[in-house]
Image (cartoon, rainbow, N blue to C red; front, side):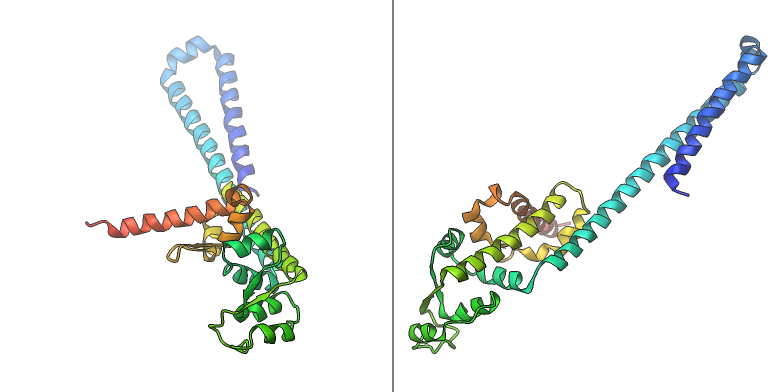
Length: 248
């Protein structure tokens, strides 16, 4: 039987006993009875009050326990949704866009053509499942043959490539925002979400998930939950450092 239901039944029984006790007192003559057995009446009333308070406490604790269980289950459901929705393409694009500077992110957001280094051009094409233009790449990156990790030659991205990059970037952020909104309003277990999504923030390096792109998209106005989540993790790290720095 449900524990909450048991608590409610106990509470009803306690109140019923209280009413029954009052009826008995009335039947035998309340004044004479109270005078003769005032000690018993006082003790009984105290016991009834204690039982009532204990029953109420049990109900409150049960409700809280069920609420915490529900929040943990919701957190697990959102984690499952994340793993089922996030794609290899979205993950790859996220890692690439995090390397873009502010101007590249601005042009990506407004879908304007821009150039990227030859050394990540192939990565972009692979991420969005497109074949790279080998002729254009070879012309642009002739000096480094497209294989030099330090190559700084530029190659343009076409509109189609930019649209795919943008769509995957925004899809990633929208999915993350929807999960972190639940975290922000404590609909889910906050500790579980913080633990599972802490990789989105690197306080040591001062990096936040798609920071440059989010600033162009409106930062806290467009993705407030992500911004709050990042700030919260950074604050937690600062608090831990302060604790470690305390001298006993």
